[in-house]
Length: 73
Image (cartoon, rainbow, N blue to C red; front, side, top):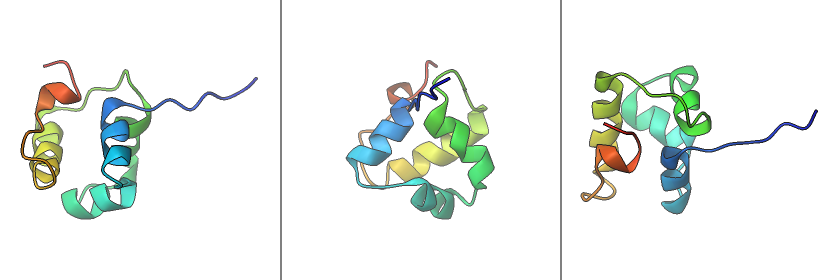
């Protein structure tokens, strides 16, 4: 069986801004295991606290970024 690599809107956003998982880990102080599903599983929705932490760091790069860019809220 062939494995299909899927990305999320968050994963795509990071790529567009030349950022990666390491950057997100360092900025949020969250472990990679907690962040990987956010980048690779379009069905995964984090809790509100994680969303706010991530959004706060992403707004440092692009102040127009909003939660609805990544998750249905």
